Image (cartoon, rainbow, N blue to C red):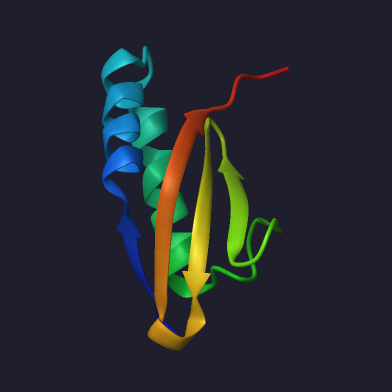
Length: 86
């Protein structure tokens, strides 16, 4: 089953800011693309559950919070941030 993935405006702006400030824009682009692909095909099979419909997913160097609306086949990404290596 395929889901539609949307990025809420705040998440979209944060992603653009992360990309603009990144020294490795390619890795940010690849992570965002991988997140989209994973959420489109199996949003409940990736990441970890949080409260209610919210889940968290990390694809280095990005992490996102997203909500899954199964009945609408919709995934809404509402927060994104950069993950630093330990």
